[in-house]
Length: 506
Image (cartoon, rainbow, N blue to C red):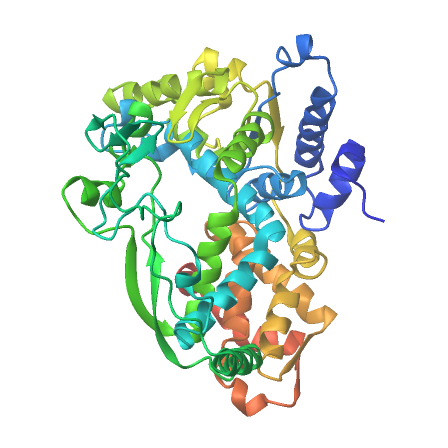
């Protein structure tokens, strides 16, 4: 039975992470406690809840050992907005690179997408029905409800102007009080109390029934997929970028948020609709998306997204070691690194960031920093920033045993992925236990002799191993292909033995 997030204790969280990540127990334990503390905080009284700050984490370890995956899986488990940023992309006050506040704006954008996707399920049935009706209107013009059946506004005359309206003995017209008499206003029949209006002639009942039968016939064909390739012209809303705000948040140039439709309107451009010729299949998706967007309460989505970001958001800052001032180093580059750290500091401490969706308080966002820290150390960060990352966890290098588990145990294991991919070509791909072990040993060996890129080495090994089978998949259709240890050695051993070649191939 699936356990709800609020009922998950740290041990349950680690168990869930174990389904996707091999080893790294210390890191899993640290993030599990951090997530559980968020659940605990939500149960506190209002007067103390705001005082409980998240315990931010620094993960220390080489590339490819699972730092990003742990943070990403944690966010997915919690249903929390998540973004990954590289500290090296930021430069002091946003010159040339990005400004640090952009990470909060990106997180809010991610949360909006999450919330809208969640709300989509509630409105999709109604939106799908509306999209179908609109498609039928486009395929059979005039088969829908007659607009002329709706009475015209009594305040409009035949020329489109606004007639006078008599209240007692005073006639109110377009220019105010006109006269105090009994003369009826223009557009009113003196013998009738109601204004004259031209109603369309009643449609013949048989003709209406024939149209209705035709519409239902097309509805059946539409649902059966018989009209998918027919071309039709649809009018869809131009994509809106939100409010007209050139510099949301006052940051660098990357935060510029220009609504081109708003500019177009300001300078007398086109309206909010554009016509497009597409197939019925494409039109259905376009109209469905438009109806869903129209039916979702945007204000409610923004409020929910803001609450998610402020209380459950996770920002993963990678390459943190690259902006640390290395011990004994001096120079302009190190001054710039320190400047980026000082720009990051207020975001991590807790401040208000302006976004196009309003102000976001970062006080309770969980920040997870990561880096190899092979040249620099966490202590090389400025003291203020160190204090905002009280938890430090070191991730272990992966050996052949770990690689063997990574290839087979997780739900998204590489062997399972490749078997599923080849299954689409009607090829049954099977890996023997000995073959998996040999692949793991080769990956570990190459990591020792070349650059250590952790589990990412397995992707290179696997791709090289099944390259020929993937290329000639059509020839193997309907058969079972077994990958053995001998096949692994035949394909990869020569590359591994040639150290120079392995640097380029593996």
